Image 1 (cartoon, one colour):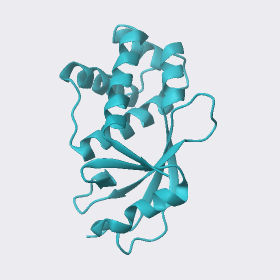
Image 2: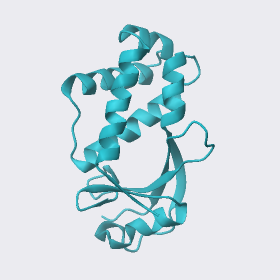
Image 3: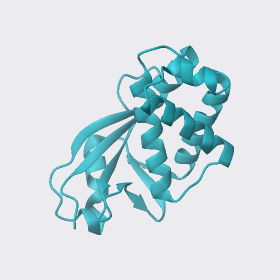
Image 4: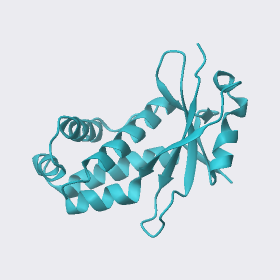
Length: 165
C-alpha cells in the first residue's frame, strides 16, 4: 500500500521569525506509521516548501504520490517560550512539537537518554490526558528540567539532519 498523501512540516527555531526556517516531508508508510524523509539515515530538511516537496522524489514509497500539503509547524521557539512561562493555553503547541520530534527520532532510528525520554513521554501523556501545561511541568520538577530535555531532543534531531537549500 502506497501513501496517498505526503505532508510538509515546518520547523521554526528562531523566536524572531514568524515562519519556519526549515521544512521536511512526512508520509505514512505501508505499515501505517508516520515517517519523515531520510537519505543515508539522515533527516532531510529544505529551506523552502517547494524544496521539501522535492525531497520525496527519490523515495520509492512516495513515487506517484499527489501534491504535498503544508500541514503543521513544529514550533521549537514557541514551545520553549511556553515551557518557560508554563502558561495555560499552550498545551496543544507543546504537544504537537513533542509528538513531531518523537516521530522524527523514531524514523531516524535515534534514541534519547532513558531519563530524557521518560520525562518527555510523561509530559506528552499528561498533556494528552488534559493536564494544563503548568500542572504538568510542576509535576515533572519545574520548567528547567523540562526545557533541558526538550533541548536534548531537539539537538538529537538537528545532529541527525541534513539541511539543503
